[in-house]
Image (cartoon, rainbow, N blue to C red; front, side, top):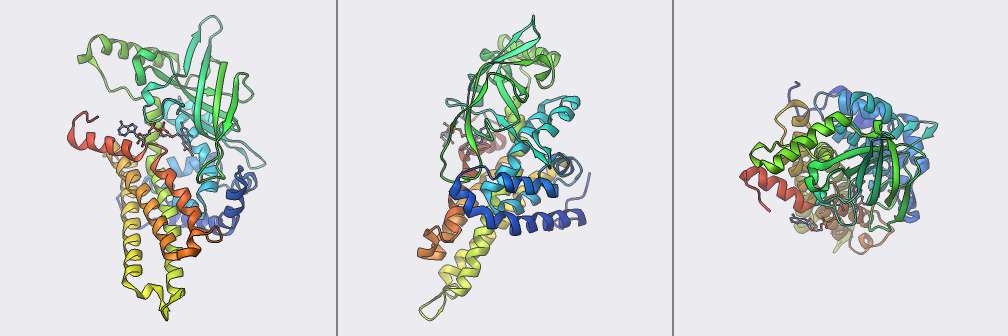
Length: 410
Ligand SMILES: Cc1cc2nc3c(=O)[nH]c(=O)nc-3n(C[C@H](O)[C@H](O)[C@H](O)COP(=O)(O)OP(=O)(O)OC[C@H]3O[C@@H](n4cnc5c(N)ncnc54)[C@H](O)[C@@H]3O)c2cc1C
């Protein structure tokens, strides 16, 4: 247990400054180029690996070595203040790492998570593959199947995954598949697809509205065979879970709240994703505040008009409110008392704040704000994903409304 405090400790201040320096000197100057190129920014990710920001050790330190839980959101806010597309290219492997940590045994975590990062001289990537063309929010409807071949102790996976960050270019793909479709979410399990496995390939690469530096693709699985040991958590645990779920089908009174593997991961990563949204919003707010003090109209700086100054006042207030929700969720996740609603509140509010603040920033910059000469239009494009991935706005509302009402709101 650690006391909740609004002051960061010395380690966190050091990490905050370190990530900020990297974001300011390396990430932000490269942002426009990689947005235009719409390609994965390998040189920047390699630089992040060289300084230790991209890698297993940093993730382990930020996620496990910090009792307050605030280190990860603090780091994410700074990184995404630099640029969201590059930020996600650096953080994307963390989704796969969280998928492994949330569902794997300690041995599986030690074997596979480092392989999601490689080494500073040989950078590798991880991808977390849940969504499908016909199942995004409705994770219980996954169609990708995993069938056990007992004779060979192998799992055979078939299906198509959609919108996968680092999909097809990753070394390690963590795939959530259905072992028993009748059991919906409770019949699913997570699998590691090791590097070089035949039967996994990249489908289309999506052209996106924002975060264009981040690679997003389909992942196609065609009779993709993996060893039995690639089932995260192990066969015995899965068999027990399936037996419990089947019993619950026939006798609903005995239903237990067994976690769906995908949901367990998303719940853990939501505050970190919300912190990314805070970073984008802060970038736009700081930029438009400076601009409003400089830009003259009708013989005075535009900030001297209440309509502009109040807009900035509201931007600052919403950003602080979003950060407080993020810190509360991250703190409680590490110290007990966390409920899904806290993570969802932080993601819901931070996502909306990023979209609203970046749109207002364009307004403050006027015609310049609408052009690609200035970064605010890019920040606005980048912000919208924060309302969509890791659970849409409406899905966060669903989680919160169920938590506050105790009812199965649909
Ligand atoms: C850039 C990008 C990167 C991504 N990266 C990954 C990744 O790495 N791994 C991964 O697995 N997925 C990833 N995704 C997928 C993302 O998580 C899904 O797009 C998201 O969960 C929404 O699913 P959907 O697109 O199928 O929308 P749908 O579920 O079809 O939703 C469409 C609309 O209906 C609403 N809606 C749906 N159900 C309800 C309901 N019950 N009540 C009210 N409204 C509802 C939604 O809120 C939304 O507005 C990524 C997506 C993008 C765009």
